[in-house]
Image (cartoon, rainbow, N blue to C red):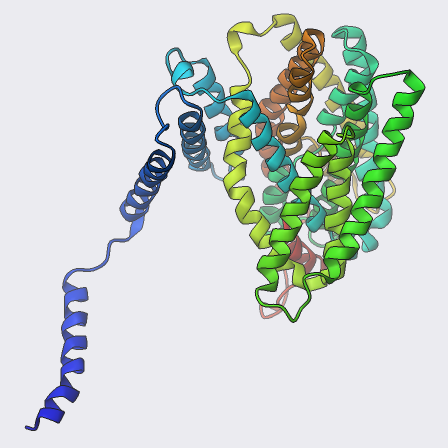
Length: 490
């Protein structure tokens, strides 16, 4: 055999030997490999932070953030493992929230896991910008156009009346000033896509309510409901921290709404065309510009003295950008979703860590629960009335009302915003109001999120008609296509 033939055959021998080694020593897989990877990544995160800053020690700020993040991720995974038959899985945000609550209220652990208020407020503001970006990208113009009448009623009616009811109740029962009462009202009036969307997708997968487009209706109206609640909250927040006469504060609130909308319109039109399609990595550039502008709007509006304009600017900008991009917005939404995977544990963990059980006023908890329950009852009744002429039967109307109860994401995103601004002002009275608002918001998450998930999972198969396709080769009907589109967006 010649030297050339030996050299030609040697790669084949090497490949065969390598394949035999792989067969004898298979690569690790399954739960153990997944767990080892997670543990190593967590340790690597500590090592990187320590090697760069040399300050990652118990009681330090960076140590507290890392511990909170890793603990919140583990808490969310543990809650996801709770699976009961015929019931949708519990949202992982509950585990994240409870993890932060535990870290804050366990002796000695509280001192070790310490996070500075400035860092906490900044991280929550970034998470708020990401949530608003996802909300703007998640609006589906097609679904809104097809179900515009009933969608508008379901989004506006329950949100507005619940916010007004909670405001009146909290003003007279909890002693909150009217503007702070409406801040609490708009915080509690937002429905949670983090609970509603996964539950609706599970029902839609089994064909429940698909024939009349109920999953599409609830997911479309949910995004608009959140936008309305955040807009009302932002306006009231700007008025609450404004100085001067009442009429000037009201005028400032109007200016924040108009200014935020105009700024969002201009930025949205700009980002529709830049970066241009002929540039490399268009998706990455669009995602970076969109998130950068969203974070800048939230922080910049606060620095400029118009804190309520940033959220509205972000919503308008992202919605216009999604309209301009059309179907090309899906990759951008996926990138934004990856950022949300990182900031969701931080957000809910930090919200839970804001509550110190030993300092809670029992009157605040009790009266806050009364306001919450009364607001939920009003929301149920109003939702039932809003879908009365939507072509649904009695069982479907009842299901839509039950599915419109859970609260979580928006409450966590904006629940502590007023408290953070009150701390910056240094006014102890405003800090008390902000803490009361945050306490009721946390109570709303802990009570309505699991109840809403259970209610949707149990009531769906009993109250909704199951749609069975006669031809198994049919891909999807129109409502299912729209729901699948919403799954990719939310």
